[in-house]
Every structure is written in C-alpha cells, then in structure tokens.
Amino acid sequence: MLTHLTIQGLAIIESLAIDFTTGFNVITGETGAGKSILIKALSLLLGGKASPDAVRRGADQATVSGRFLIRAEHQALKLLSSWGVTPEEDGDQFAVIIRRSVSSKGRSAAWVNELPVTTGALKELASSLIDVFGQHDSHRLLDSHHHTACLDQFVEPRTLVRSFHDAFELAAGTMHELRRFVEEASGKGRDVDYLVFRLSELQEFNPDGADYAAVKALTERARLSAGITAALRKAQELMEDDSGDSVARRLREMSRALGLAKSSELDELANTASRLAGDVDDLSFALGRAVGKLEMSDDDIDKAESRIAGYQSLFRKHSAVTVEELTESWKRLQDQVTALENASSHVSLLLGRLTTEVRSLMAVSSILAEARRKAAGLVTTRVEKELTDLAMPSAKFTVEFFQVARSVPALELSPFGGEVVSTWSDVLDDWTSVGDVGSEKAEFYLAANKGEASLPLAKVASGGEVSRIMLALKKALVVGAETCVLVFDEIDTGISGRVADIVGQKISELSGYCQIICISHLPQVAAYADRHYIVKKIEGKDRTESTIQPLSTTDRLEEIARLLSGDKVTKASLDHAKSLVSEAAIRAGARRKKTSSEAGK
Image 1: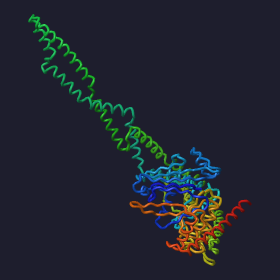
Image 2: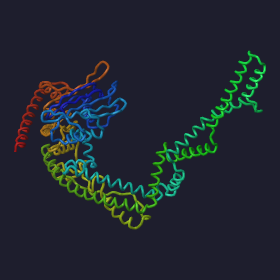
Image 3: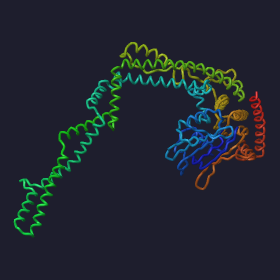
Image 4: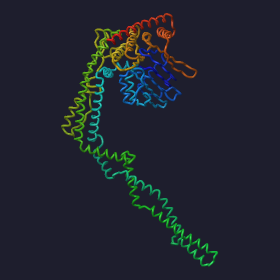
C-alpha cells in the first residue's frame, strides 16, 4: 500500500503531505481544485514523462516522494535485491521509498530507498506497485489495438508474453541486418568498388599513431624554428661582414695596436680588447652550433607536411578526429569488404540464422496463442459476472481473434543463388503471418442487451458501459495480482443513479484485495470510502495553492451532501448523505465478512 505521499513545487502545489489508509481512499473536490495534479504526481513516481512545465513558478524543482509497504513475497523485493537494496522492515512488511524530482530546466532524477536509479528501472519497479487508470484509458479500451495487451495481463505463465516479445525482437533484428546487407551488396547502399577503393587508400597510406605523432612534431618544430633560425643567421651576419672582416679580428688588431704603444696606461685596454675577441669567438661558435641544431632538411620537412596533409584528408573522408578513429574506420572497411567479397556465403549465414529464429518465434507464438485463448475464457467469465453485478445482466462479453497478415517489402536475393531464394520464400511465409503481438490479435466484442448481436466494443458501448467494462476488467485482474495500489481517476464518468451505487460497491470490493485511491465526483461512490479527502484551491494575495486534507465524519457527510445538492447543503441533502454512508457501511461490512469467510475456507 501507499502509506505516505509528499509533493513539493508541483504545478499549484507548494508543499503537501498525505497519509493514506488501507482499503478505499476517495478524493473529491471542485473542478480545477487540483485533483489532476495528484495523478501527475503518481505518474512521476511511475517513471512518467517529467516536464519542466510542471514545476511551480518560482521553484527550482518539483519533487514527489511516495512510501510503499509491500509483503515479504512481493516480486519487487527480488528486483530491489538485484540492485543491492535492502528495504527497512516495518512489522511483517518492507518499506519502499520512491523519490522523483524534475528541475525547472527539465533535468529529471529518481531514487529508490536513496539509491539513484534510471527512469527505466523506476518504471520496472513501480509497475508492480501501483496501477493508475485515468479517464483516457476508457478511450484506449475502445481502440482494438490495445485489446491484445489488455488480454495479455491474464496470460499464464506471465513470462510467456515477454518471451514472445524477446523472440520477435531477435528475429526482427536479424531481418533488418539481412536487408541492410543485401542492399549494400546489391549496390543500393555503398558500392563495393568504392569500398575497395577507400580500403586500398588506407592500406597504401598505412596510418599509425606513432607515425602521426612524429610527423606532427616535425612540422611543428619546423614552423617554430624558422623564426629562430633567421634571427641566428642575422646575428652571424653581424659578426662578420661580406668581405670576411669579423668583429673578433678587429678586436685583436685593436689589442695589438694598443700593445705597441708600450704604455702601461693602455695595457689594460689592450687586454680588454683581447678578452672581448675571445668572447666574440665563443659567441660566434655558439651561434653556428645553434644554427646547426635547428637546421632541418627541406626534403624531410616537405615529406612531413605532405604526410600531415594526407592524414587531414583521410580524417575528413572518414569523419574522424583522431588516428585511433581512423584505424577503427580502416578495420570496419576491411570487415565490410571481406563480407561483401563473400556476399553469398554471408547472406546464407544470415538467412540460416533468421530461419532458426523465426521457427523459434512461431513455436512461442503458437504457445502464446493457446494461452491467450485460455485467458480469453477466463476474462469472459469474470467480466460477464462483474457486468451482471454492474447492472448489465444480459451483456455478453467475448474475445475474438484475428489472424495477423503483414506485407513485407520485397528483397531481391536472386544474385545470391537459387537456394537462398527458396529459403527466403519459406521464411517469408512465416514472417508475414506473425506481428509484434503474435500470430493473432485480440479484439473485445460486446452484446450489451439480450438478443443483440456481438459487435466490436467501439461500435456498441456507451461511455458508462465502457467505464463498467474497464472496472470489470480491473476487478478480474486484481484477484491474485501483486499490484499494491489501484488508482482510479474519475472512472465513474457517465454513470449515475443505481449504477453509481453498484460501482461504489465494486470499488469497495476491490479494496479488499489492494489499496484503492479513487478520484470521484459521485456521492454514491464516496459513501463507500474508508477515508475521504477533499482537494481545495486557495487563492492568496499573490498566488493560488492547492491543498488536500482528510475529512472528519461530520465534514465527510457535508462533502457528500454537497456532491448531492451542489454548493448549498440542505438538511435533506445531509440526511440523504447519512443514509448513503450508513447503507454503504452495511454493504461493505457484509462484503468484508464474506471475504474473510472465503479466505478461511
């Protein structure tokens, strides 16, 4: 059961905390008060789409948190255990806390018992905990495309449908691979000659990471050293003029001239000139050595630059950024060319694999078809029983099956040999007779009244009848199911009077199997609730806010009276409300006594 729900910053809800009880929880309130926001909050817990538009204006994010209690044998515990999560024990049950947030920028995050999980993982867990039925589901029930999936909820073993879908996806993947390969090999995709050309181009160039790094370093070194070499050469030129007269020679001549003067006053200057001449010689040698180190062969530089240009051209052709990506493209081309050069054998290989997978698919499909027919008998019996209770005693509900027949685009396989064509023909016979739902699709038929012909549901069912059929299906499904919480969002639309009271009874019966949270506008339904909540919209000075609160016995009677008579509660409507609640309590008590008696047998 869902014991606690917390909502913060969602739509017109700033902060809200609700404690739910076991059994039947009903929520009422005026149109626009915010009842739909509760469904949105539960949808987020189920892994539904998280839109930034749902975040309350001015808030950074919206957060929804739900605390569930589940039995020790519930399948959700196995899933949590595989994630490494051990829920906290609460008596003989275990607490599972789901938290979901969506930021005003659209980023979504989810946690289960504080463990971060993906949306897919959240959907997998939440689907076994809570089932939300909204008003739009009535329209889905009128669409026959959803009938097979609805019937599959009754199929045993429950893993059978998943097994079929896995087998179908496997075969469909091989079919796609075969079709793509044949198109490539036939020239409808990449041309074989072009692939060979691209491969030979790579083989001739022989790209390599170490080679690329070396030539890139060489070209960068050449680019950087050009300016330095020019400066060094200029410095060398300044050390010696065009006639070969160097600075060092002049300094030595200066030293000799000063020394010939035989003057002690000039000896120091002569020594200085001699020392400077030696320093200039050292500088000249250093400049020459530096130039020698920086000088590179023009031929080597040209080769390196040509090599880099070759790499850049291949990068563009293969949409690569690094040499590693280029070598990966090279390997893929090698694999493609090898496969294309041996196209016939590869087509035969793929077709052989597809044949095995389709045969396996047909075997699973046959088992599933049989299981669906058994499930159809169970559904028919249970739904008709429930419809009798829901004031449709003469209704005949049936499940009809129609063979799947699909058209498949042609695939030209004659270039690969007659045996391949023959095998493809055999595979195609089976493949066109099975779809993603199986070899048959189900459709619900109804004869609402005695003597009428059974026709597709969409052609004969009124809005109220569809709601009752959906309720009957939910009642049939919930027996023995592991779903902890069943949520109804105004399922009673199009229903009134005596039928409304029967719907209330049925929902009350359902609450004996799982927790019910029901948004309703009918007093007859609200009268059966174990706890009654009201949603109100409060308009403040600057903002509007939605709140929800449980009602006391007195307030509950007044709310049911309001549902009966409108905004003005009269003594007559209050007396009527008391009568409804009293009669509902008697019927609910009899139901609980019967359920308890059946459980004891």
